[in-house]
Length: 114
Image (cartoon, rainbow, N blue to C red; front, side, top):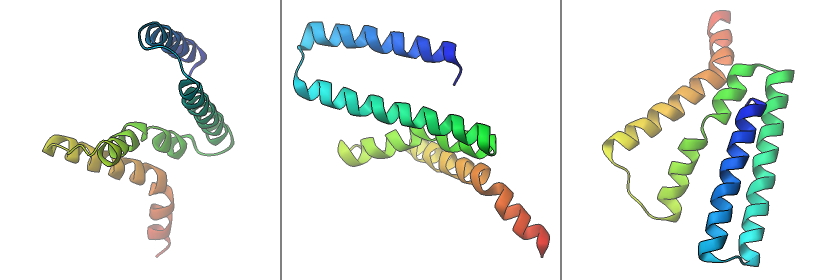
């Protein structure tokens, strides 16, 4: 992700955080959850940058782009929400696309050897 979009993202998160703290208050649990999510976000960005700079950019980006799919699955599991038909089709196509992009080179290399 470019630096300018990261700055925009962090500014937006700060604005929402200030609003949340003003309306809902602030607890140690909020600090813990925010800290953990920040560390995970930072690790994801570092590994994404390493994946693009040291290896193939397409597979690394496709795996990074599955965040919406992972969040949808977690929402279904944690909040026990059900998926509509379109959401299920989007989930399947997202996972299929990420798999094809991430594993496409390996699969096609094995197929061309035969």
